[in-house]
Length: 318
Image: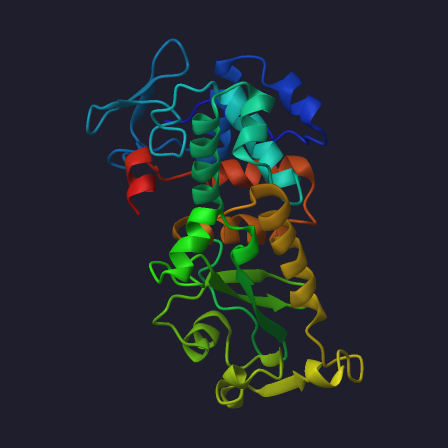
């Protein structure tokens, strides 16, 4: 069965347009239905296409498994008592602010508790990471730059308790730090990946970058061996104040992207646990990869990617 889902995605160019358009819950759910099913409603429980609509236009019942559902079932919005208008406002804020928005600021902006704002942001990040980073970057003739950044606070900024734990050997000086690898096609897509203790640069490069690509890196020794597996490996030596050679050999693109990532961590979130760092990486990469889209299309794309549920229990138990 299909309903009236021919409504085109709204061309939201400002926050006020989002707020003014979503006047009630029914309109919000109609928008979610249009973005999620594109005119062909399927049961989120069994995938059946024989679906009946109740008179309220919000609830549905599957003719196969006989279960009822709304457009929210099977998405990041499932089980949430937060009005969908606030959800769409949050999505707009997260995806349009170049360095993100903190849970405290979001809580004030849409009038929820900070805990609720934090959970909403993580569910949105869960959606942003769905299907975005599966395919390797690059390809024949494509230049891909790679570099690494380190996140984590400085010892001098830690509390007296934490500094004492370091001095007494109960905490390592780098326990709060993590390395993030970045891979970016020039004028194309970016990926960030938190480097696990058991992962090597070779494994990550061959995982995220097609070996037929032209690889550009700095002179770090971690790239020396694996660089030979690519069609060509260009190197710039920053230790010799070399940053651009022949207008081709450089890593300025990935370094520019890392500057946005670092500003997000330092300026907005301040402190990010290693446990959730990959979600923040996905958020930053998603905004970068959709930077040329207008606001309305970016909101629509995010809503289309909202399939899959993240529970609070699963979030804090990782």
